Length: 69
Image 1 (cartoon, rainbow, N blue to C red):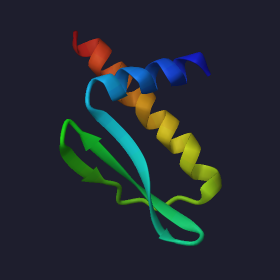
Image 2 (image 1 turned 90 degrees about the vertical axis):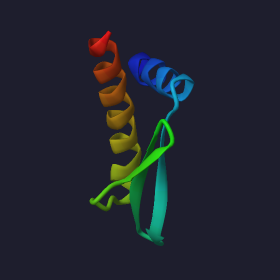
Image 3 (image 1 turned 180 degrees about the vertical axis):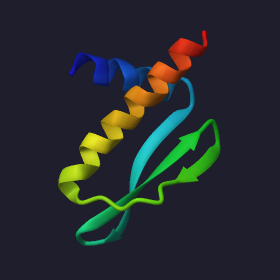
């Protein structure tokens, strides 16, 4: 869980925001604001899937940025 918060903190400090967009009462999509470029997801998620996917994306971008250095 510590990596989740470290990844999220890193992303927020570096202009990478990940947040849910409601579609209806039971499903959401995710939008990524990658340094002011908005990238909508093509997938939809249930409430149970949503949080897990957002954490996965924060870790993905954290690892991507750290490996690029």
